[in-house]
Picture 1: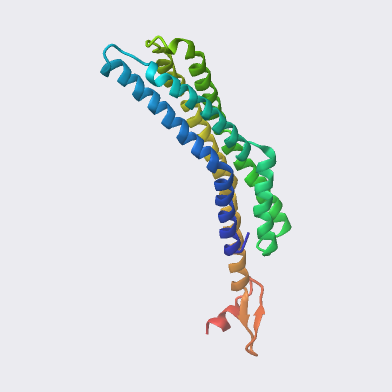
Picture 2: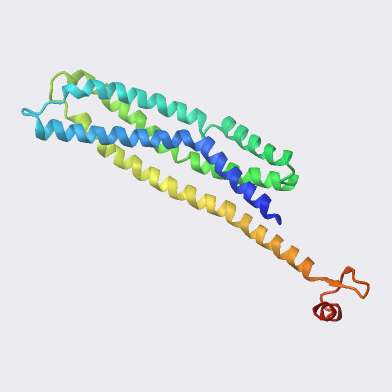
Length: 231
């Protein structure tokens, strides 16, 4: 990719694809973190502040929230890069815009599609632990409903943060692998651009002024035209 403008266009497409495919997943991740933080905070309040310790006042609300969290996870899954149909449609739509403006050749378009597909799939895998965590949270709180009325249902408040730590650790590993995949997929694109720019520079360096004042190409081993041009 020898044209710098085309290189910038590719980077813009990469950012737009990430925003469209993974924006919903980012909102879901933030939603899950808020849910776990509220569970932890209410558990501490119920244990240390209230006398005697009571949890039933918050439990029903948290159970409903956990179900809404699962719904949010399903929506994020279908709208994000984890869904193959959605992933392909977004990538093809963004590449089609470049082709309409003649910013890419056909070969470069196929190459970009493959790179974006790999990156989107690796990013989508980071949504897997978060989605499983929403399901586990809903299961914990729905199974805890029968004992919430007793006022001593500490178990959901204790289990939720511990389960969350496991899935958050899984999510961090998946995120690290996704970042590495993205760097591998697009680092050689920058190298191709640099190589193309060097080719253009070499072509320019192999031009010299003739005796008639016209630009002519010369052999790189022939120093006479270069000397005439430098004079």
